[in-house]
Image 1: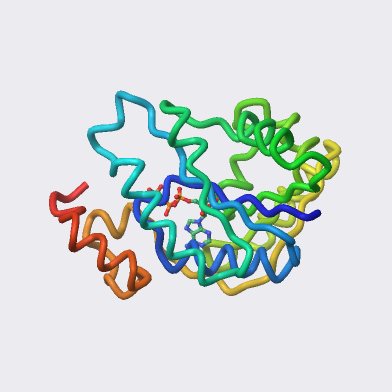
Image 2: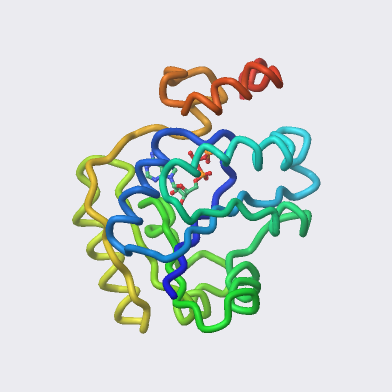
Length: 196
Ligand code: ATP
């Protein structure tokens, strides 16, 4: 079974995330997609949206794939989330599954700074989508280097859609870059009214 994991803070989920996930789905053709909003360290909790609301917003990903679950595991763990712990959890929950991890280019380019990154490479194939037009040569170089270290990296082709959650929170990106469900929840919970 091919399991595609898509993790992130998702504060809020936006079209760039959907774009990334759809490109990864095309590249991997998974049997199951697991979307995993991250826990937040206690000292940052006040400046971030509550896990329950981020879980609700992540329901927007359901339209991307018929067999998709939004997991509350990292949120329930509380505190900062580490991908290696999540991969160990998924290996226990789905024994024998081959795990793929969808990431944006910023994540691939900083991958060797991640906690226990060599073990992540042993447990998962990285599936990377560009976030910035023109970064393909850098991505290719980073992918080759990680492969040299024994990892497996798939570059999922898709034109970059340059938007971030930070831009949305700060009011610097059009709200149309939010899926309709997320737009509704942002209004209902009065999110992102203070800039930052
Ligand atoms: P923030 O601005 O709060 O740091 P973000 O927009 O970078 O948030 P995250 O929730 O941190 O979003 O990202 C989750 C995953 O989605 C990461 O792997 C990230 O690289 C990827 N991602 C985010 N935005 C895009 C985008 N526009 N295109 C492709 N991938 C993206």
